[in-house]
Image (cartoon, rainbow, N blue to C red):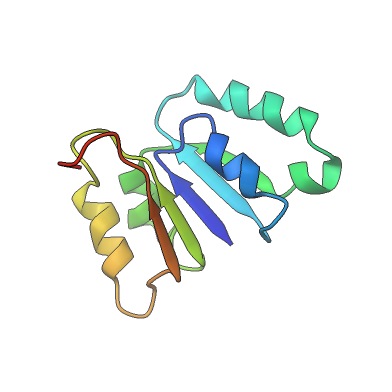
Length: 109
């Protein structure tokens, strides 16, 4: 059970779909949904059904409990780093994922 926040066009998440029960990706850029749809189209049906994408800010996904039932959280935030809502969701007692994969383009993030 994988959730990818700040996921862009789901490049990382799409590569994990064969190993996961599901991969839920999100990003706030509305143009990314079309790219993910093309990726899903090229996957075998069984894998395509396990990959979902939502146009939403990471904070909104975190606030509504989008990290609560996952085993792995992948984040690739902008240079400013994780927003407060995502950090709070990652640290919520009893809901901490087994693994956090933090992809960063800068040390400050």
